[in-house]
Structures are given as structure tokens and as C-alpha cells.
Image (cartoon, rainbow, N blue to C red):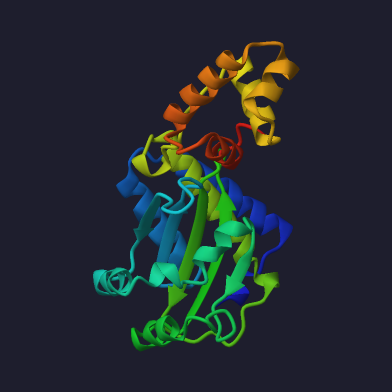
Length: 247
């Protein structure tokens, strides 16, 4: 099955162009789900799950899941809070990383790994990508039959990454709520205050650096704190860095 999908420059770029055109024709989330299902089946898998994880808030990030996995498994996943121990979720820390499901990957999540196999899934693969708005997409595919080996020559990681990238871009294009990110525009002065705040400077120090009053610095910090819904000025800088407003 997988030898037919052996990747060469010619067939990969032909597949890439065709897939891009197919995603460009989508206008609804339901169409996106159907296309993902079709593409996953073509790759030799039965199920897919696309988890979208936003970078903030840090302790309770917004998460959305698109999946054709039977509802019984999704219910079981949520009821047992597997999201807290799922090793594939940690892929958000390394966009572009790919992992074959294995005993080693699930070494600290044995209960989940046993339940996956009891549910009838015998093989799986996950990888992550990052969207322009800094949300991370983690795509996982699974199948009922055992695969003795998946090697990079078959192009599975590359194909899944591109599939996930197109899915995220399409969700942004059709304005799906899952991809709505914190949308805050800052003035030049606010960015300056924010950057020096991130450097650990006090309001008094920032006022001297920028040649403005300490009252003005505090005004900008408190205003940004409200807009970011952040508890303090340190958190403002952390959130701003997470969404790419400051480097």
C-alpha cells in the first residue's frame, strides 16, 4: 500500500499542486472535514484528528479538535482527560516534528496507549505545524491494521505537514472560530514600552529611556494589560512574545 505512495519530486509536487487547488475551492468547515477524511484514506489511514492549540492563555490554552474518529473514542478521551497526558499534544512545542506512535512515545501514558489499542487502533502517526497567527496544528492519523514500518522515504511526514498547513490556512480564510487569534494592534509608543517592559525595565527606567513621564508609561502598561486581559505587566510581555508582537 505504502510503496504506491513512494515520494519522488515529480509525484510529490503534482500531489501538492492538486491538493492546494482542492483546498482553495473549500468554503465551509464541513467541506474541509470531508477533504481531510478523503486525503487520510488515500494515505492508508482510517481516522484523523486535527488539534488546534492557541499559545495563550498559557495555563488554559484555547483548543479545538476536528476529527472523524468515532464519538465513543472522543468521549472516552475527554472523560479520562487524556489531553493532559497525550504525548502527541506536546508536539506543539516543536512545530514540524513528526512522531510514529510507539511504546516509547507513550511510555509515560500507558493507560492511554492501552486504551488506544483496545479501541482497535494498531498504528498512528502525528506531526505539528504552526500557523501565521502562532496557533499550532497537530495532525494525527491512525489505522486499524498494523504497519510493520513507516519510513521517511514514503513521504508521510511531509504529506501530513502540508495537509495540516493547508487545513489551518483554509480555516483562517473561511474565518472559522477555531483560528480566531488574539488580534491586538499596538501603536509605536506602546510597542516601545512593551519591548522595554520585556527587558525587565521599571516604569521609571522606561520613562528615562523614552523621554516620557512615568505616568505615561504606567498609562500604556495598564491599557495594554486590559487589552491582553493580563494580570500584570510581566504577563503582558509574555503574551505579546507568544503571539509574535515582540521578538
